[in-house]
Length: 616
Image 1: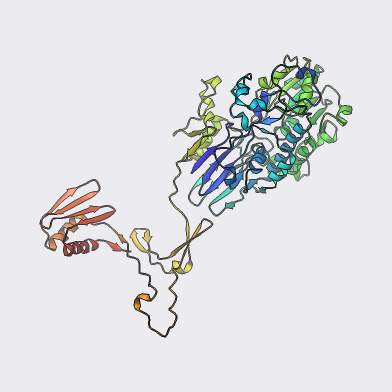
Image 2 (image 1 turned 90 degrees about the horizontal axis):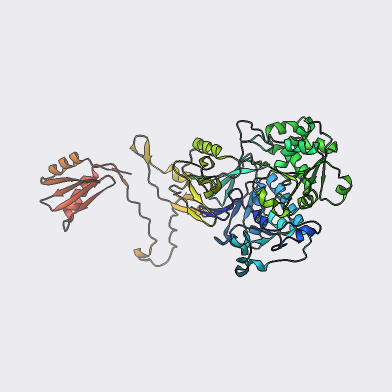
């Protein structure tokens, strides 16, 4: 069994597992943190951004996972854990020769489609006066300022895909439900289980008849909106004071976020707090090309929600309060800042929009609009982007900044506790989880400390997992089973010999009856006996048991063999018959008779040994 690591981002994995002649890709996350190396893409021309020194690249490049470790056309199956881990799917399935199947839950597919569509529209609506690609050449890249100068494999960075690639990639997805078992070529069986991280998020069980692999991706024990795996409720966020203080002072609040996921809980949590602070008239704006679809999907996937929100559906009530906020015009959603938003917009307000990197999307316009006033506040909630790097192109910045990352995934303490309960034979994890962060080398609590230590992998590494296949399931026909005659070799253990033909197809093995030779066709002339079809010989019987030393010596003396020298070895005993110049090796798993040029004696000794053994 081998594991190929194609991604260097631990929360946006892309690994390939080769297991029982099946090649399985585990997630295909897209690391968009590389866009922090570029200038923002404003919706309208920005004189300030255009005058910034340095290299200006507007080709919307994204950092794709490493693909050269293996041929992507050999991948049989792709398992998707959540919609954040499928953003690179068009790069994997299109123009690579991929002919396999992608498995995901329905919410993962639908919300993943929305996120891809949003990314495509963000890129397509930005004016592209010029395109820059020459900087990827090594002789030019080394002249660039950091961090571009130090970036590795920039030639693998790809332009953003289009809707044609998105639709083609998603057409290869086959929907599965929680605990549904799917067989892959008769070799292994896969099954998704709720991970509690997001709507439809899954951990995957990959197993054969005698081996099991558990793939644990983004998982959460928090009580938020998805189906939970938790045992105790933990509050989502307890620091919304920055909102009320800003709004009371007449300022605006900007929340860069994704169009699905934590935003559902943020809308609920923040509005409850704003309302309790007597600021309920403050408008909330959700701006995204897929804002309307995202809010609607969150209301129709009731079976994928936690129990509390499921129960509201049967009242009937909408599971999320943002439906009521939309009806009362307290929450308004728009596809962009153009059109109706321009006429409905009033301040102070709270705006949720993307992209969290502050490099593209409607958020760039609000940064230009509100960044010069200290009355306004920007609140970062996405943990995957450095807020200092995200704000760098907008400096000097007068607006206040609050960094409050909301990461609902398991922490190191929870993972360690979970592994102690499950007690897996082997643990494999990203290298980043086996050592403290470089900036906090003293924080041993920010790493996994397990015994035995986990196997660590890094980007572009290939691990040979210590997973040895020892057994295989074989089916037997009823007529063959009826012909078996078991013999008890130990109390409670019986064995039987079988003569059959092994038939293997689609990784399923069956014992079939040995076909009888066809009868010879009648002829006028008698054929020789040698020309008749051969008759299958009966198999030699198997021997079971042990040869006791004292009883065997007594039997040798009874048959006239007196001079026997016994030597004890690590494997058993060696008997030297001095007069006959013969050696007999008595071992746990076999008996050997060394006798030169004396076939009658060898045959006699063999028959004496067989008296102590049982034929099967």
